[in-house]
Amino acid sequence: MNPRRFWPALLAVVLTVAGIVTSPFSPANAAASLTQVGSFGSNPGALRMYSYVPDGLPTGRPLVVALHGCTQSATDYYSHSGWPKYADRYRAALVFPEQTSANNALSCFNWFTAGDIARGQGEALSIRQMVDHAVRAYGADPKRVYVTGLSAGGAMTAVMLAAYPDVFAGGAIVAGLPYNCGTICQYQAQTKTPKQWGDLVRAANPGYAGPWPRVGIWYGTADTTVIPANATELRDQWTNVWGVPQTPSSTATLPGSTTVAHYSDAVSLYTVQGIGHGTPVAPGSAENQCGTTGAYYLNSICSSYYIAQSWGLGGGTPPPSPSPSPSATPTAQPCFTASNYAHTTAGRATQSGGYTYANGSGQAMGLWNTFTVHTLRQTGPNHYVLADGQC
Image (spheres, rainbow, N blue to C red):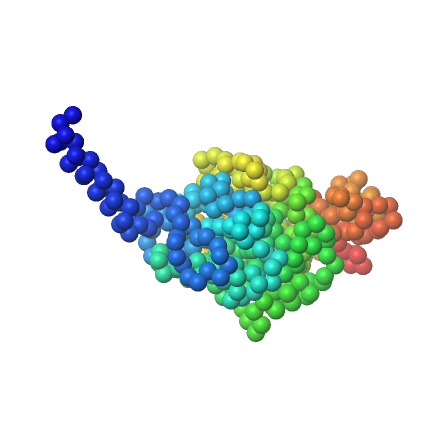
């Protein structure tokens, strides 16, 4: 090769690469990809911020914050959860906070640390600062900011909804825990009343009177990592905050052996039969299919699609809850009084770790034996609630 031709060509390549490296870069003005944001605030929780902004995203679009689980990362959740598909399709920006091993050896968000779950402190404030940055940088609509997450990310979702109800219009907690319950809830059902659960949320932001975010709760009936009782306790916590009854106003059946119980239009409880601990996904190209399977990504139903629909991301305002079916009226709800052992053998409840949980609602019923007796009321297909003294 002629040196006189080679060196100018090489210099041109170097200058071009240097221009790419040093030029301002953001997902909004380049090919859409998951991009780390270097600076977004004081970041007291020492988290990392990643974002995904579809090409040509106009201002005034929704923002979704997606929180990974333990041992996962922002890239992992971005790649498997299916959220980029709906960001592209429904024109929304995504923020993926990421925990570091320096903060937590298993890369779990610290949902159990007082300094990280309080308004204006720690990891909760870091995530709030990410939202503020995204609203400014991407022109997101501050009235349409939503948050979701799996496991520790689900527990941190509950933290954000409690600590910053004025920031989030809605949230979806996947295999997570109630706000301010610590680590004990992960393995053991609690005996708090709905008011006691609700008081924990109200104490996170004293004096706040609403509006409260809409809350979706997702869990698998075979989850042994975060026991299904957490779903019922989350339901009790947020229905009490909203001031609506703990009895479903309606129920519906979804794909993937999933049922949903709606509590007015405030709280929805999604029960995925037979799956363990993970984000429900359903690989495929259909509108309601998404994600890829992997560790803690379980093939059953595309939870991200139904979460997006519940927030109205598919177009317009969030859809209203379905009208109650005739079977949901009080006169059509049969009751069964039996021992916990008999309830499980009859298919009205399940047992895990020596404890019993009502099918559908996941309510804790105590020890699995022939001496503990409860009354269950059927409120839908394979959906039972505790009704001691009410039938």
